[in-house]
Image 1: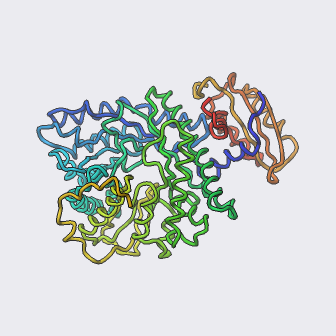
Image 2: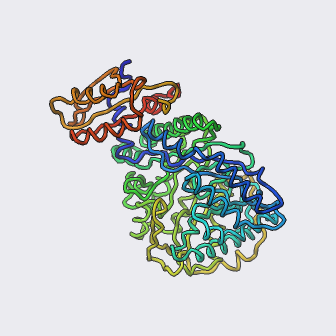
Image 3: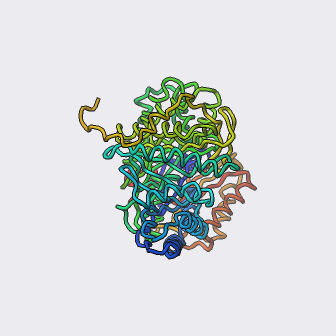
Length: 455
Length: 101
């Protein structure tokens, strides 16, 4: 058996892992809880706990074995479940907080670091169960550690449910208030979506959609550090050539997701769902999407040209990644969270990156306004206005957008919040002082857009 | 080696560091102790570093993959060498379009 790789190829791979933070960000097991419905709330909780701990009992061990076998770090093992509004709706007396606590216990028992799916889809309106779940979110997120929540309030086909947008403005503020002693961390586990994907492995927005199989494994890759190195090693390439280099790099990164997904699927006897092609930053130095944009030639992320640079990056990642994987899904694009990205934090601190610019950037990349700390006294209607704008971008552009903002209790623009771990920390960003109240309080639905006349 | 997929028990070990006498003897002895079979070795100077790449078959090895990896990294450190070990499939997937085999 001769060595069939060149030394350069081998060293490239070794350096990606050793120096450039290449890792598998998450293996997420999707579990259907549709068969856990029951008229008695306690029975529902027991069925949920039993099913999750049975199906996911070997998930963490499998992740660790794969990490050891292939020498590729697998950072997170997670679980996503059927939107809980559906599962709890059959109860005679609703106890959604109790279900959240059952999810938390199950996640703790199997050793995963997050469980997503305390969710509802209300883009056209609320059922009784949806309304009860949304009402329970602040308490559920303040009484659990590992549970993540998401609510889809808009879609290209349905339009924007503005009653839900206003309600979520209130829920976000209340969730932050109930977790004030940790800078409002509860809101960091809550996402408001337009066009939510049903197979997303990333938190806090993961849930197991109703069209998904009984149990499935989805994989999220990472690797901003690897792309950053390639961009910075090629300062004289024109942008077409640079896009090509990023594509090749994205191919290699995504390949690792494909490898790990197949291995985990085989080991656990669970079908492999999708690889999510996202470039997911972490607070670690060198693992930043903002650094890549600056590496392309911008003095600071957020300045003029940032949206164009991000559009190039996002598209190249998708092109390279889609070739590398048999099934692609989830969010698939570059993430631009603030607190989880040291370069974004630095850009906000330097005054280069504003909320308005972040909103513009979400038009051309994955997800949306993510992990942004707002002043604690931001009115609920202003939070709702921020959500409405982001939903409109998703609806019109037929893409997923989301809002995960944290109105940090007691903090003002310029103060700093700390969430710790992968969630990082960030400066509180400035919001517009002018009220959106009369607009968002009109309620009703913004109609779905025409799919023709596309200018 | 239940941890490895597709029956493949081959790994690629890299040794990086300053060139000095006895590197190959040292790592060969270490691998022989665990009954790991060296199939091919290449060495070169890349970017001023001594770089050795080995294909090693662990089919008959008497040590777990994870433990060998830690042992190599730890022993390497004492020799002022950086030693990594990854499954061969990692390189197939990353550098060959038909990586899935």
